[in-house]
Every structure is written in C-alpha cells, then in structure tokens.
Image (cartoon, rainbow over all chains, first blue to last red; front, side, top):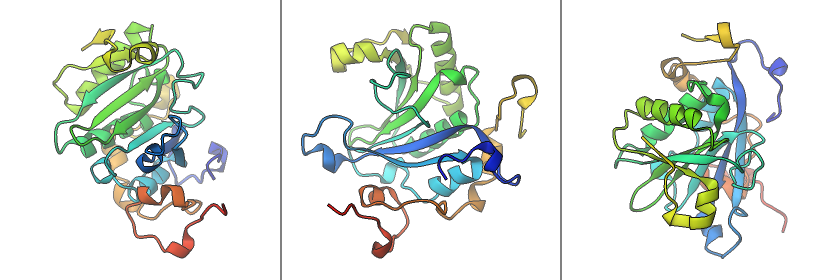
Length: 189
Length: 56
C-alpha cells in the first residue's frame, strides 16, 4: 500500500530513502475557474525502485500529457503547494526545456531525486513539470530558500545531471506570491 | 554502484543502476486505483469497467 513501511518491503525489492507521490493537475478542471490547487489529484505513492518503474512505465511522459497540465513528484506528506508548511519558506530552480528533451530531463530529475544523488537532498521537496505550448518547464522545489549554499549546490548538481548549459534562476516562493511572473531570481547559475 | 549507505546510511542509487530495472517493471502496481479523475494520466488502455467513478 502507499503507506507500506520499509519492514513490509520484500527483500528482493529496492527500498527508496523516501516515499514519493505523483500528483497531476487537470487543466480541464482549471478552466472552471476553481481555486488554484483544488484540481490537484494525487496519482499514487511509491517507496521502492520497482514501484517507481511500474508507475513510470504506465503513465504519460510529459511530452504526451495534455497541454497545460502540471505533473508533480513530491516527497510523500509534502503537498506541492506554497502553503504546505514544509514548502512555505522555500523556493524553486527552474529550467526551460529544449524542444524534444523534456522527457529525458524529467526522467533524469526523478531518478536523481529518488536515488538521493543530491548532496543536499534533504532540502528537496519535489519536482514539477509544466506542459506548455511554447516551452515546457521543470522546477525543483526546495525547503529553505535562505540557505543559499544548499540551494546553489542543488542547482549546480541538477544542471550537471541534465547536462544543461543555459543559466537557471532560483525564485523564492514568497517573491512569487508577491510579484507573480515578475518575481526576480535571488540566485542565478 | 547500488548502495552507498556506508557513511550517510542513505539509500543512494545511481541513474545507471536505476535504469537497469526499467524493463522489469511493466505492470501497474497491484494496489493502483484507476480513478476517473486521473485516467488521462495513464498511457495504457484502461478497461472502462475498471475505472472507479465518484458516485456523485
């Protein structure tokens, strides 16, 4: 089940350090002018390598999702919302995906998160891919935006893992709330 | 390559190691609940009779 403790995982399976939840935000529900976040649906929670692939192999990859969709993978118990107490003081790094590379970038981001490849992995809340006509974006949400050293480390490692050469910016959720699309990046790499 | 749990005790897996499992796990988890509000997320054809729909 989604709450299976590691003790219940058969030995042949490979337990992950954290349980993770996939979330999907349905654009058709959004058009009904409902409050942001209320159309967000949790898809499933996984806690082993095998369970991850069982899900990943049966769900649409970003390039096949409907336009306007948001797909999330967050640590279980953290809701992908600014209001979540763990996210409240956080922020996010965002990359704009090169055409045709979104699926690979998303997969490599997921594998790095669930495989605990980040030195400051404890800082990570999760990742989201925004499927948009113009350009897909992937963001990595972290907890303590003020902790510059941790955020910069995560941003650097992420760029390396994705072999991403463009510059990326880190936006505090607080700034995003206040300034929306004109929020300025506090850290840039 | 699999576990580097020595110093940190964390379950760390490299990308290459994780990728070796991709072909082995092709079925949806047995406890996966196919609800009508997430059926469009699935890439596999779903038997409509198996979709759980809210009664209202």
